[in-house]
Amino acid sequence: MKPRFVGRLGAADAVTAGNAALGFVAAVLTAVDVRLAAKAILLAAMADGLDGVVARRYGGTDAGPYLDSLADVASFGVAPALLVVSVVREMWGFETLRVVAGVAIAALFVAAAVVRLALYTAYDSDSDETVGVPTTLAATILSAGVLVGFVDPMLLVALSAVMAALMLSDVTYPDLHAQDALVMGVVQGLAIVLDGTLGEGFAFGLLFLALGYLFLGPRFYWG
Image (cartoon, rainbow, N blue to C red; front, side, top):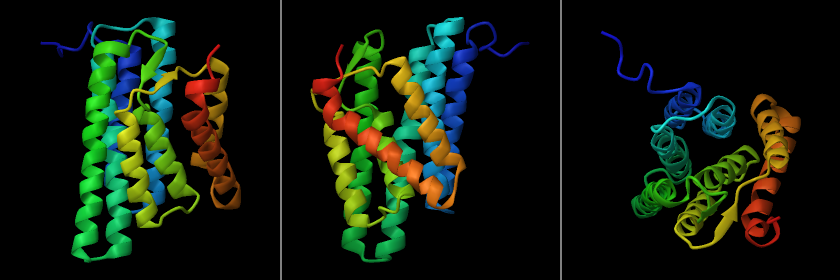
């Protein structure tokens, strides 16, 4: 008796499943080391970009868009939210009211990511543009911020609330061009593998690129 997925899933789907696994690893690491967790989220983001490349090269499957959104819930919804909660608990300890507020905002971030991904799968997956801030971008900004040392819990909670609102906004974002995605991927990879001042420099570069796309992409990136 062969597994049901044999003959129904392709190479791109395997990469997508790896993205989901990395999301789980990132979620576990939030209880161990938030910097490692942030790097795992960024690695999942690279896998999320790679599955599209593999799908274009070898073809996709009918299950692909659903798998992609399910994996993204783990990697770019739950894992970043747990990253924020971990920082909140570490910095604020048992100050109940502030911790509850931080957890509530993180839960809102997850809910917004789920809704945004469902809408994307239903309406945008075959388009070269998407409505609302991509979950990958929101998670990248949070993770890069942690890597460069922006770990003030108030800042991360506020940023999570802003990202949740933007994920549900009607702002339209064009897909990244291949060459720009490659540049961002290289910077992202170096931010993951390098430590110390050099690694932090690439994390700053990644944060700069991500914020540039966040604010300027909808108006100036078309063409």
